[in-house]
Amino acid sequence: MNVIRDIVDFFLPRTCHICGCQLRDSETTFCVRCVENMPRSLYHLMPMNPMEQRFAGIVPFVRATGHFIYSRNSELAGAIHDMKYRKFPSVGRRLGEIVGSELNMSAFFEGADCVAGVPMHWSKRVRRGYNQAEYIAEGVGLAVGLPVIDVLEAVRAHKTQTAMTIEQRRANLAGSFKIKDTAKLKGKGLVIVDDVCTTGATLRTLSEMIVSEVPDCRLYLLSLCVTV
Ligand SMILES: [Zn+2]
Image 1 (cartoon, rainbow, N blue to C red):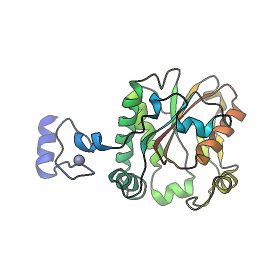
Image 2 (cartoon, rainbow, N blue to C red; image 1 turned 45 degrees about the vertical axis):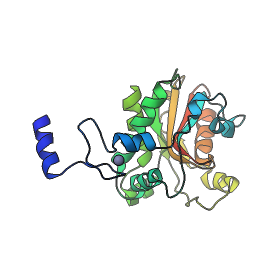
Image 3 (cartoon, rainbow, N blue to C red; image 1 turned 135 degrees about the vertical axis):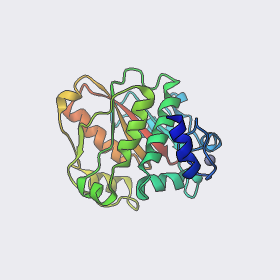
Image 4 (cartoon, protein in one colour; image 1 turned 90 degrees about the vertical axis):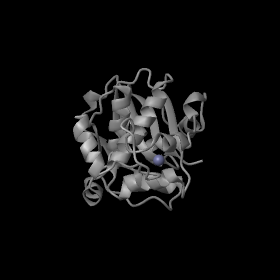
């Protein structure tokens, strides 16, 4: 296998998605230096962290965090943009692995049973070709050793939310999500994975729907990035 990989690397060298340097055998998608330079929030080490404050008293959850700090024009923002819009879903899987393994060093996932990405409506999925949140969820699941389950569904397409306030976003999202099979979530700890958390409206709407349908489902809200 390594011989084949060496031959492939010779003709098609694997390069870091951020700095473009040639990757070593032990590196995937990003070089060690670029991974080290990604801005961590370290929220998971703080009791009632800023991400948990966003949801406290609104939806019940076990833990919540946004792992990387998102700022426009950063190297990480470039990678996130490629992941979402330029057909590089594998960037999402790798970032999910990094986040999953770093959070797993703390007790973040204690009591969690399964992972699911924030669902995307089929019409958007057809346009984009994939749902990046599923790839991030896959990476998290791989790193943590939890199964990724296909249980959430986006049943209504909604408008782009970039310029909306949280209340406008919430109205825009109302009735957007559905559970395909509530039995799969009964009594379970579900990690919901999103890409970038700005107002928290998506995670909030989705969580409210889940706990109203399956009150004994315990939620872990995990966003790859968070804005501050
Ligand atoms: Zn690099």
